[in-house]
Every structure is written in structure tokens, then in C-alpha cells.
Amino acid sequence: MIDPGQLFNGLRQHGIELFTGVPDSLLKHFCAYLEDHCAINQHVITANEGNAVALAAGYHLSTGRVAAVYMQNSGLGNAVNPLISLTAPEVYNIPLLLIIGWRGEPGVKDEPQHIRQGRITPGQLELMEIPYSVLDADSDSHQVLDSIFDRIKNTNAPAALLVRKGTFTPYKSIQKQNLLSTLSREDALTRILTLAGENALVISTTGKTSREVFEIRARLGQPQRDFLTVGSMGHTASIALGVALGNRQKQIICIDGDGSALMHLGSLPVIGKLNPENLIYILLNNAAHESVGGQPTAADRFDFAAMAKACDFKYRMAETTRHLEDCWSDIRQIPGPHMIEVRIRTGSRDDLGRPSRTPKENKKAFMEAAIDHLV
Image (cartoon, rainbow, N blue to C red):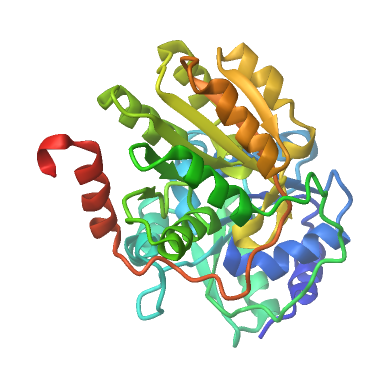
């Protein structure tokens, strides 16, 4: 296995001084090392992967140096536009190094949302004409880096490292997480699902949130009919808007996370413009990308109350289950859209499982609850 510090030092030797991107679980030990060993202006966690590519391009324009952009392979979708229309040789010919976690690699067990992405990732890079090398636990990182940087030097264009599962030795960050609240996400979700009642339609964001929603329903003996967004990070609010526009008779509960919200923040003013009165948008804010390693987001310094007001949401904030109950009581007879920012701490149970139902089974159960004639 490769020590994260070894790769970091190798990249530094090749002139990399800026690291930017969106955290990934396969890269979490490397990302944690970056957090501990980079100055604040040398490691930038962006809202989405396209932002990171553009940031790296801007850095090159003002320094002539190459930056490293890390991401999960699912984030390639967000990065395609700037990679093709900004950094490509036919346009501005801007070099950068992509470091991509290869979720769903063929032959490696993974979650359903990663299977197709893992299968097509090499083909995506080939289609975009981005040369790549595979990095795994048995790789000689010095040789791999020498080869990939030779390509970058010769083409003055992007190249990629495709990182396999289990590549890095463990590294635990010494950085302390900002503590916004003492409320756990699981306790908050338990209260939210109870308050929502059995007739509401619930859409939950990807990662640990949906995993906990599934287990809470099982523990409470309630039917599994929530839409558990297992992929599509950043799009939960838009899915919920579509549900709200399609079914105005039911209360629609969107449970999002701060990392997801920041990734595609533009969905919120669109919701405000359309003014779905039956939508309650719940933002679980722990200022962390917890599902992929706990790296910080910018949500601890973002004014969601001001954002909600600007987008015509009715805003409330909760830090305890009692606060949640008070918020629910306040909005019960008031048309939405509502935003409830629930400040929570990081952390989850070590034995947290994953949904035992397939995404298709989940979709069928949700649609039966949403569409009367399917029941």
C-alpha cells in the first residue's frame, strides 16, 4: 500500500503546490493528509468538481504551475464541461493532474450507484482524450508519477491518476471538526420522520443520511417508502422539487446535507421562484463531507438564513429535538416553501448498515405512496 505522505511528497517534487477537489471515500486518507499538511490557500475543498477544475485552470493562468484536482469518479460528470471547453488542447491547453477514486471498478464489490460509473470511467477518460495511469497498492508511485508528469509536460494538457480501492495506508487527521451542535444526525432524523407522519413523501440525500433513514424506518416498524437518493450528490433538492410539482396534495419533505446543498446551490432560488407551498426543505448541517471521510465544508461560515430569505423560503433553525418540534408546530398551518436548518454534530454508529432493498424496489415503493392509482 502507498503511504499518503509518500504520494504527497512525490507530487510536491513534481511542482504541485495547490490541491483542490471534492472528497471521496477511496481518497479519504490522502485527503486527510492534505488537510494536515497544506496551508489554507494550498488545499481548497470546492463545492463541486467542475469548480475545482476551473480553480486549477485559473491558478495555472496566474502562475504557470500545475495543480492537482481530486474527485470520486462519479464527479467526472460535473467536471466534463470545464475539462472539454476550458482546459482542452483545442481551447486553452491548460495542464492539470486529475486524481480520481475508482468506485465501482469491475470485479470489485460496490454499491449499485457506482456499478455503471465504475465500468465506464476508463472509457470516459479515453473519450475525453485524457491520458491516465492506474494507481493501486502495488504501484511504484515514483514511476507512476514520473510517467504521468512526462505526459503533462509533453501535451501541456490534463492527465489523470485512476486510484483503485485500498491503495492508501490509513491516515487519521489531527484537525478538529467544527462542532455546530451536540445533536446527532440519527436522533434528528428519528424525530423528523416521526413529525412528518405517514402521509408525507420523504426524499433523502445520498450517503449516511439515507442509510440512517432506512434503518430508522426498520427500527420503528414503519414501511420503507422514502426515496433514498443513493447517488446524484447535490441534486436532492431538485428531485424533491419535481415531486412537489407533481403531487401538490401531499407534504413533501426534502432531507439534504450541507455538502450536497453547496454542490448545486442554484437549485434553491429556482425552488423559491416556483414557490411549492407543500415543500419542507430540511438542511442537516454538520459542516462536513462526513460520508466520505469527514472533510470540512464551508457550511460553518455560510449564512443559510440569509440565503433562504433571498430565495423566498420561510426559514427556521434547530439545534435540538425540542427545537425541531417547535419548528414543526410553527409551520404546520403556514404555506411553504420552508427551510429548516438543523445543526448536528459529526459521527455515526460503527455498525450503520446499508439499505437491503435495491434502488428499483425503493423507487417502486415510493411511487406507490406518491401516486394513488398505483396503490
